[in-house]
Image 1 (cartoon, one colour):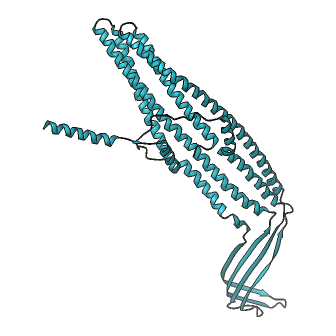
Image 2 (cartoon, rainbow, N blue to C red; image 1 turned 180 degrees about the horizontal axis):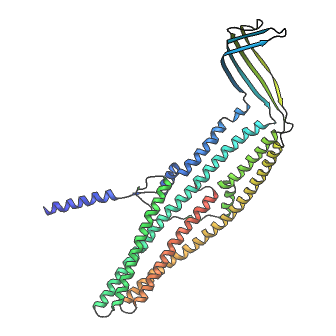
Amino acid sequence: MKLNRFFLIILLATICGRSTAQRMLTLEEAIATALQNNYDIQLSRNDSMVAALDYSYRNAVFFPTLNGLMSTTWNNNNQRQTLADNSKREQKGIRSHNIAGSIQLDWVLFDGLRMFATREKAEQLIHLGSYTIKRQMTNTVADVVTTYYDIVRQKQQVRATDEQILLNEERVKLAQYKLDIGTGIKPDVLQSKVDLNAQKALKLEQLTLIDQLKERLNQAMNVRSDAQFEVSDSIPIDMELGLGDIRNKAETGNPDLLIAQKNIDIAELTIKERKGDFFPVVSFNSAYNYSRTDNKTVINPFSPLFNQSNGLNYGFTANIPIFNGFATRRLYRQAKLDLTYQQLVYENQRSLLNLNVITAFKNYELAKKSLALEEENIELARENVDIVRQTYRLNAATLIQLREAQNSLEAASNRLIAARYAAKVAETELLRLRGDIIR
């Protein structure tokens, strides 16, 4: 009976363990989910779809406009007339019915080449929309990467804190043992317990921060806020990034720079549109008209009771701009000023990009050097803790010395984890600036 109960407990523990196990979320999966679901990316795609819709109708600027008009009117009038011979006619309730209809065609044949600039502008706008999407996707991926590895960093901090907790628990036991055998003092035991509790409190803070970062990652991926997952344990770093390669690719691939360049192209086309306003607009016009009037009675014997007309007319019109209060000149000068503005924005964006690349690369190089140094330093700190712990056990070292050694190990662990994460953040920023973080 006891054996059966034992196996039942093991089975229930296994089931509970499986139900609480969290799935492993890889960085690639997090990026793919964010690219599909992220709200900011969806908004950018929606804006780009508007430009794509306009582009699909780009050739419509060359098409004529065709409009139809239809009207029907019933009249019931009182009429009084005095003719040249002073004779008078007067009648009430004169009713008539009029039907009119027309189909009108207006085809612009020449507008100073403005229609060509408008069509080309629609093409440039769709390119601008694609660059806007790329910028949002690049920024989103960078945010996902830094958040993901921030969670990994905090997990590593938890492991470092667990190491400190184990050391402090052993220190409490050693201090208590020395007190029990009469070679220790009570303050050493109390201080060891205080340090142990401090590390436990720090672990609780780190676990809370991990939960907060996971919620932030869930929001970036646009999944439910209570979705549970686990992340990897390591932070891989590309140690081979070069400044020259980053600069060259940023010149041709950075989304912000591409957007600034495309705004210059659009501003140049706007100038062409404004130039077209100085030229006459030549149009071909044609209309088919139909009119029918049915009078129930007339007061004038020479007026028809029934009148119908229909026919086709066509011709050309030229709308020649002569003076409109200098509005055309004002709009043209505004377009030229906007081009100058967009060129300045491009040069400023290029300068900022170069500055950001240099800054990020220096951070990257510093983090790599710090990482190599701290990887060596952590081994020295662990060896030092082991030596001081053994000497403390033999009463050849004080509690203060052991505590100092543990603090040095904790600081070394924190610096190592911070350097590793800083290197990853700098690497991610370089890839974002280069424009190919999405591979």
